[in-house]
Length: 110
Image 1 (spheres, rainbow, N blue to C red):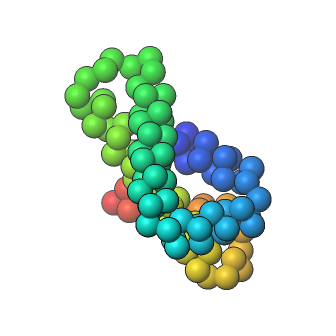
Image 2: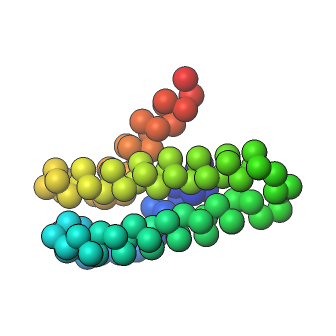
């Protein structure tokens, strides 16, 4: 989980906050773009799943586990970014993502 989270946060931090906000507003306003971004996100998630499966026996359970972890982390980060934008960006996007991931880790620990 931490590997997926670190790689996503690193990529997000490399983008300028204005670009993240602008992309969100553009995608939010254009339903056709929402469908396309969904396709791109799904493709990227599958790349992460493949990376997690590298070097481990490829069993149905391993694939299922990799997908659950990948989708949980990417979904959490997506929710954090939207919440960050809607909150008026009072903190950094990275701090917002870290807070959201802390919530996820706490729930996984139970």
